[in-house]
Image 1 (spheres, one colour):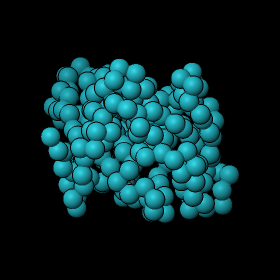
Image 2: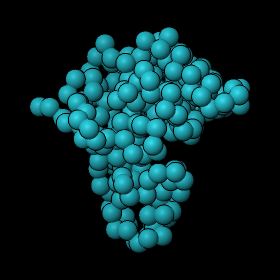
Image 3: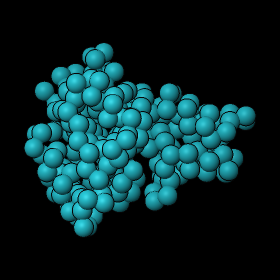
Length: 208
């Protein structure tokens, strides 16, 4: 059984996509054990509670340093014996200390085709606004293993999405979520659950 922990800050649509994929059998032999938010009013916590999942709120302001915050998060996740951690709209940057026990065991989905429109400052609608401002014809989403460098970890899966001429940031965000994020994030978790992912340097190898 793959035991999953999730870190959230907002609505939790990607968390819901994971929960739905587990229920549908797309992600085999897996269970979300714990959902942690750094925001006490995050709707993702309600999604988790409705699904019978244990939740916790761990806010950065409760700790003197980022390192202490990272330690509190990691200890809560270790207490639940999680095998994989999913960032699902988690609006905080994790420091190097967090990965001491979780190297290549933390995933994130980013709403662009990394390395384009990624790194510090590229999150939420800002990503899609930047895509539209440059006149790109194609965007998409990327699932990657998380490292201390923002959006720079080994890539697992990517999926392209066409940019329409009449798009605004909100319509593009919605389509990227529906056509890419909610598809490839569960796929990546499924591959992990099946033991089909291995990391070699900066490359992720998917076995058959």
